[in-house]
Image 1 (spheres, rainbow, N blue to C red):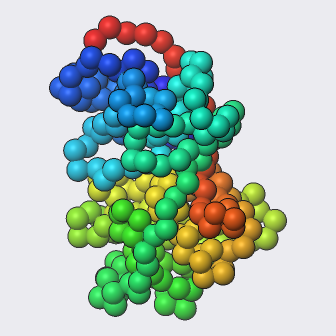
Image 2: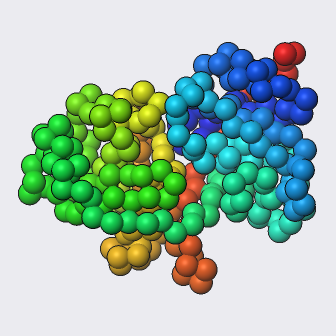
Length: 266
């Protein structure tokens, strides 16, 4: 089992030959949000093929488990056939970096527009936010759609009551606020109204990628950033974000640890 940014992930490194039903049954047995299965690649240039299953059928596709899967593959001796830092993965045509315990994924450009006024009003009302503590808002889309509010401080973000908004009335609400200068992390992020049914997500690579592309694109961020997430639910998630100005892409990564290793017969 891999542990990525305070999120548990089960990885089956020899998933070849398992049926969809067997995979789904094992994913349910682990009682973790997500389980991945590694298999031999069937496309040129890939090092392995990856299947990602959830215990909740309605959960939106998430990309973070690919990092834990990559770390597990390398932990068991996997070596990329491409560049030393890049693992070719037959999964959504993205590029990943795996370096010791830290891994990252390159994010494509997202789309952003003004957050619809009626959506903003509903979020403000439900969370009881003070308008003078809202810095800026946007609706971002990089696959999932995110309704993002930047608040004046990390304290404002942490004070929001996640129990006051729930899926499906609300979906994909992201809050971000800055920590004081000199703090370990520059920003605090929370993902509320998740489709998984949880009060909030302990770590959300897609949301942080969308925020990063928005902030870098608008010139609000210019240097690498460390983001904290999961604080209100007892997690210490950390995301390390930077923009490659040469390629004009954003890298979002985190640390992955192997917690449990073993074998079983299905």
